Length: 123
Image (cartoon, rainbow, N blue to C red; front, top):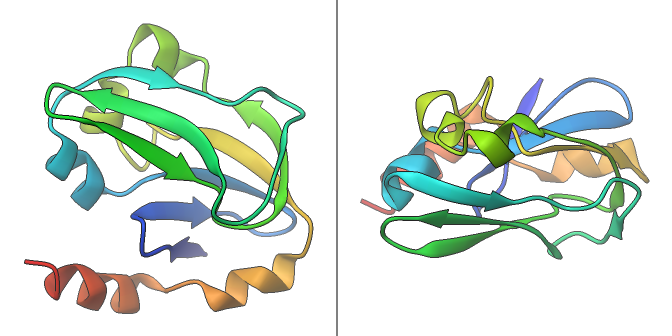
């Protein structure tokens, strides 16, 4: 089950540990990603907190915590190959895995149809 935020993060997984990355729409808007700053494993965040930073040739952008939880894993591959965010935003370009404090909070996020409608309204 994949969910989305208005800030263009995708959240994927079943259970209390989910994977987070930025959407294809977001990576297209950013352009070529040249640097990614990831959070520390063990860090705890509340929904809306800045968790990571993505720098591209165009701009720097924040990646926010989609829900409350603790970082349990980061994608170390991005440190050496930040372009994975562009080439594989929903596979190899994921940012972190977060253990959710409350899995029912996922219900408040958008599904793919709602996110696609959200993005269509931005263009």
